[in-house]
Structures are given as structure tokens and as C-alpha cells.
Image (cartoon, rainbow, N blue to C red):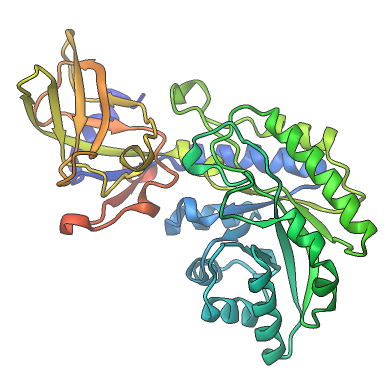
Length: 386
């Protein structure tokens, strides 16, 4: 929890804003990189989680690559100084101009998610006189045991190519002249806390790689995606995610055949280092007796709770009251779903108090909008607080 001294200093900044703990970000990166190096694993940061310039600059210091989900994310990574040779680009709906831009930059791999996309990349690469390395993103049909809104690896998902479709078209894939199948990519979902799911992933990967290799596709790398979850319930108990356990599982169960193994972590790198600081505007009680705390933050700054019921721990960091009450925390957007949490117990909370909505470093600012013509939130960094 933020100390009283720091909380009082935060009043100098206009709310709502994102507060980023750069020391914790570095601690997280050191943990991830040190364990990855033990196994020779390669980490790409999923830039969609947070593209704040200072955060990106620190991530670059630690030698991570970048995982992109749009052409503009590829451009952002390159403009931030990342070498194209460490950039991978996935996404189910790449536009022609995005593909062309990625090809022109010479990125490490484009992870293809449909056969039509594969054919389009081959066509555009041919026009540019290039041969583009690609990763086949195969849907492994695995339940990641997470929120259904953020799982990506089940059979009916929009993500990836079905294994059966790859097998049925393998000869056509091998005949393409301007793409090289350089790797295989599988990603099953986000916020995975039941780590045994990664064992199932390894079993699927082993089977798929073995079979496709026997059919003449020689993969140069295996990309097992990301998905490692964080502790939203009690963030102070686990400020740095359990990278060691995930890497140990992959090392024990994945048959690499000497191929390099790539990961794509976003949330696990940045979520715990960021929190949304918001001010209490008003208190009111509904006709049913529900006590509302109306804050100046909203779903326009942090949409995850409204979008798919995501939970974030909330604390009042300035109240000195001893008594505690149950509140529903709501935002300013003109939407009934603009609710951060219901029925939470806080110290008596009133106008002017500061609340922190924790574990918001991932998919907070990157998903912010200007709905209702709200201003985008600013960023405050731990080294700004003197």
C-alpha cells in the first residue's frame, strides 16, 4: 500500500492519472530475464499491454523483443528503437498496408492466423522481392481456465488456424514461394493462474511439431505465447509473477528438438507496476440503500471491469477514518456498466479522498478512450514524486 507521505504528495497531480512504479517494473524484468536466460528462452513484450514511452524504454534496456498486434504497434516498436529482428507480428485481421510495412521493415516473423493471410503475405512479399519468415499460429483447442472473454486457444476461437486445416493444405503451404514457415506459434489465453494448463500446451505442441515435421515442415522456432496471470486479489502478496514456475514447466514438458523457444508476456511484465489514482467527487445513497462513491475516473480510463467483469483491488489511500463502510465505486461515464466494484469495504470515504485502483499497468492506459469527450489520463512515475 502507498505510504501516507506518498499518498499526500499525489494530491499535487490532477486526477485521474496512472501511477507507475518504475522500481517494481525493473524488478519484474530482472526476474523474467534472469530465469529465461537460464534456459536460453526468448521473451517478446506484448506491447498492446502498455505502450507508455518510459515503460517501453526500460523494457528495451533489458533486451526483450516486441510482440505486436497491429501495424501501428510495429511502427511504435521501431520508433522506440527496437531492432526489427526482435519484432513479431500477430493478429487475426492484418490490413494490406500493415503487412507491407512489416515486410519492408524486415521483422523477425509474421505469425499468420489464416490461410488467406498466408497467401496475401506471399503475394505482397513477392511484389517486394522478399521471402518473409512466418510463424503458423495454430489453434490447439485448449481451455486455459481463465475469463472466457480473454481465452484464445479453444476450437471455436477467432484466433489461429485449425490444425486440421493446416494438415489439409500442407502441400499448398509448402509451395508458396515468398514465405518461409520459420516457426510455430500457439497462444491459449490471458491471465492464466492454473499453471498446469501450460503442461497441456506442451503436450499439444509436441504432438503438432512432430507430425508437421514428418510432413516436411521444418520449424526453426517454437512460440508458446504468453498468458501468465497476476494476483489481482492481493497484489502486495505477489508483486512479481511466477516466471520461474512457468519456465520450469516448459523446460520439463516441451520437446524442443533444439529449437529456440519464444514467449510473449504483456500483463505479467507491467500490470503490477501501474495503478489508477482517482479522486472522490460525491457520495450518494440510492433508493434501495446502496451507498455509491462517485469518482472522477471511469471506464474511459480503465475499461476492464465494465468490459468483461475484471476485478481490481481498490483502496482509499488518504482517509484517516477508523470506521469502515460498504460502497459501490462508480465512474463518471454515461453508462450503467461504468462500475469499478460493488459492495467493497473501505474506511469512511468522502469527497476529496484519493482511491487507488491497483494492478492497472496492463490494458489500462492502452485501452483508454475519449468517450464522453473525456481527457486521456496522464502518467506519473515513481521518480516524479519527490
